[in-house]
Image 1: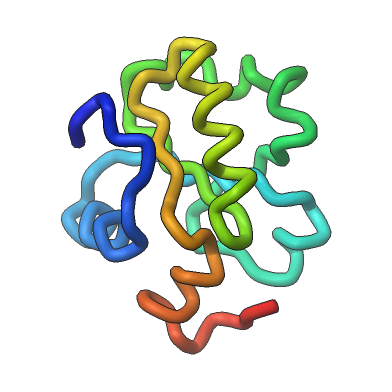
Image 2: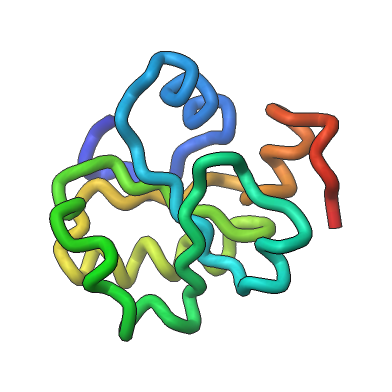
Length: 111
């Protein structure tokens, strides 16, 4: 994954997971949204708390960090902030969990 990409498609993320690539899938939605539906294996770290909880990502500065939200707006903002903090491989999943539900896991609940 090139360092400069800011966005990745749901299909690319699914392929990386299927191939067993080591990635961190970070859900930047709020906990009430996460409790409705989440991608299995993802870590909840709401955009509203990321600044004070950044230490939870220590050691992942050079690892693929794929951030998603509902539709992709918050994850894009979160990735921009993470890049400024030195997470050079942080990318936003285009379309968020809604696109994932449509394109990857059609049985997943949508909201």
